[in-house]
Length: 240
Image 1 (tube, rainbow, N blue to C red):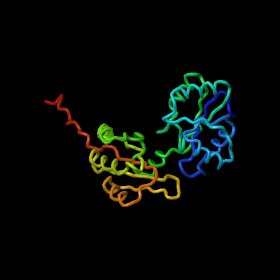
Image 2 (cartoon, rainbow, N blue to C red):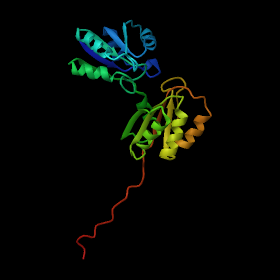
Image 3 (cartoon, one colour):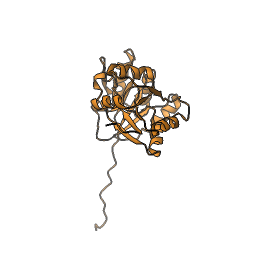
Image 4 (tube, rainbow, N blue to C red):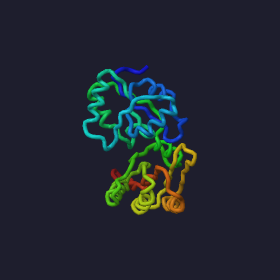
């Protein structure tokens, strides 16, 4: 049952539209309006589901203050669903400012769970899943990207990154240079017809990716730093 003056964070499919959760569909049917990144892409999803709703667009270039207008509309007694182009809201997508503002204003905020690309990529990677760090997108500028990777070089947990098709080769080359030839996994087109995961060392993956047409968004999973830990020598205290 949808509440008045509420904001619902609704996860949408990352590719295969059959992955949409029944609860997500029910929520989208019942809310008063939908907040999205791109009304054209979100419109395609809602059309597929047979749902018509007014859209409010919020993205990284939205004018400051748009969140406050949306909060005012919700507080007037209306309910809204926040969705992204694909996946779970706020995960490498806009929406954080809106959610924080809603919480501060005492608005009921509820998550409707569903697909997240980095979780899917992690569990098929063959790399440790018990402890990991999700980084998301690295900086676009070469120096800033390399600096960011350098700051992660000693991290022992599995590392997860998103990358665009335009920078995936550069990023993999930087990882090889900074991390060394660690085990890794690269996934693209998750849940779609041409879903693919390439596993191996970073150099092996680079060799395979170079020879292919680079399409779709990529998720890169890299083994953490597994350098040997120095074991202290047994204490001689008390001997004599």
